Each structure stands twice: as structure tokens, then as C-alpha cells.
Image 1: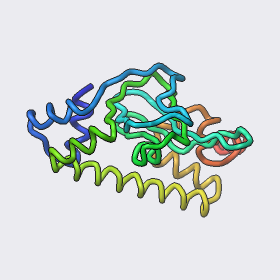
Image 2 (image 1 turned 45 degrees about the horizontal axis):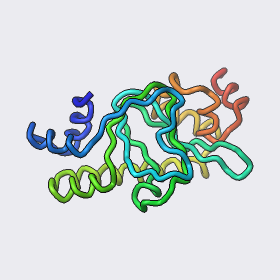
Image 3 (image 1 turned 135 degrees about the vertical axis):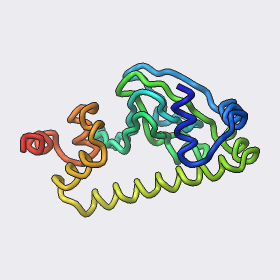
Length: 188
């Protein structure tokens, strides 16, 4: 599993064996079971999680109890509650596992120390954060400007394997449409 993390890092920054071992000392590995929470709303969320194996979702439950899916994270993706992580406040979001999942996580303190001690990791996290902001912008624009069918087609195009692993009710929530509307789209 460590190779998966190293490959992720080296897509952006080359690392010697010694550097990777140093980076690894700042991470903790953990396995979660399907349906287990990684973050619960109202609790601190001091870690950013890299998914080595498995599938997670982040979601928000509004005042009337409706669940809103914000993000899915499968292998080679990162997931956290950015507001809680960076501002060191309690999480407004929940993150749970859709499958048994193995992650490498890093605390905000370890991340800051790592970035200070190994400058190239500061560059790595800056690139990943920027990519996350761009993805969020793309998703927001999609939700406010595209019709349901366009959002569905974009989701399937961007994440073809994800649509096979995630229950349709969760995909519908992610797309902001009803389960019935999604079923009609799959039928066509």
C-alpha cells in the first residue's frame, strides 16, 4: 500500500528512497470498515486522508434531515473536511466508507512540519489543493448551470468506474436529482 502513496506523491514531486521514508513518518495508515465513519459532523477533523484502497463519501445533512453528497473519494484520491482540517474547528461534514477502505492520513501539524522540513512537499500539497479548488469550482458551475442529464453525462464521463461502485441513490444525491430521474437516465 505504501507504493500507492509514493506513486501519488511522485506524480508531482520526485522523491529519493530516503525522502519517501521521511515523508512516510508523517503519515499514519489505517483501515476502516464499510459504513464506518472517518469524520463525524460536530467532531474535530484533524486529518487529511489519502485513499490507498476503497471508497468514501463526504456529505452534509441539512436542517430538515436531507443528505447532500459533496464528494466521493476512491483509490488515489484525497478526502477531508477542509474547513475543519485547516481551521482546526469541528467538522460540519461527515465522511464514511462505502467499502472497506485503507487510508494514509496526515494531521495538519504533521503536514506543516513536513512542508517546512521538505520544501518539495509544500509544492505537492499546493498543487493538490489547487486541483481540489478547481474540481470544486467545476462541480459548483455544473450544479448551477447544467441540466440534470448534462450533469449525469459529465459524471459518467469523468468517473466511469465510480458509477459502477456507488449506489444510484447516492449518485442521485451527488447530482442533485431524484432517484427516479436518475433511473430514467440509466434506462436511456
